[in-house]
Image (tube, rainbow, N blue to C red):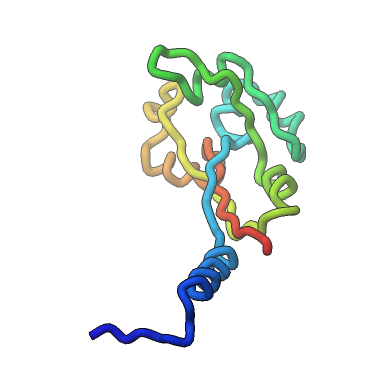
Length: 139
């Protein structure tokens, strides 16, 4: 036999559950790192000149193709790159940032033939292609 609490109507039960849901609204998003090793290899001077910027940086056609293509091989119509500091600035009004971490170093320009895989795994948290941003909605 099921134990039922008769003090709570279905609508108040749903309202209470929704309140819990909104209080704990969290998620993780992935964005492209403006200061990844790939961007540095392609154009180190440009990367160094943009250190400290918080605005997103738009990628050109070649960069868009390196990061993502559709099934026919076309690059994305747009790809933006942002720094950790930039993500914190953009999300601050609406979200509390719980964590930001860098990941993913691939075999771009045969780097895996020069640098051993174990070293590449260590470089991911420093120069990774992607920023993973764990957020909580501010209520």
